[in-house]
Length: 104
Image (tube, rainbow, N blue to C red; front, side, top):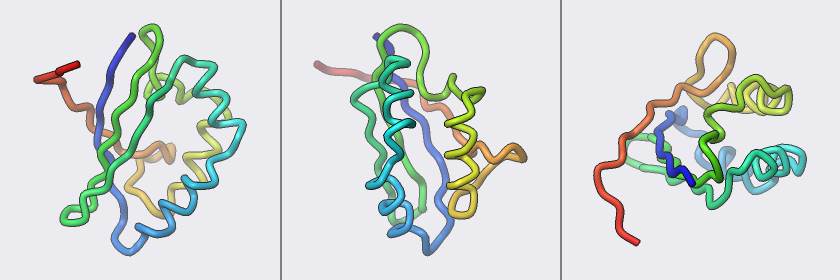
């Protein structure tokens, strides 16, 4: 099992839209992530900085951050590009966060 955390950047004023889009996450994206071993995936929003903090668990060594070549993921990136800080390929700007403490 792999635990991973990273941060992304939401554009100001798009908090409700971000929540709306994730509340209606595409079934094919959810299935692709699950089939790829990703589970227990949460995203939190820091109102003061507009930083999104994501954490997830994955069976095996691959996580959502390793699935960018999948056309479903690329379509989701395009869909979300107008409300997030993105790279030239529309992937969200993500900063990996090293784990410094874990308690079960």
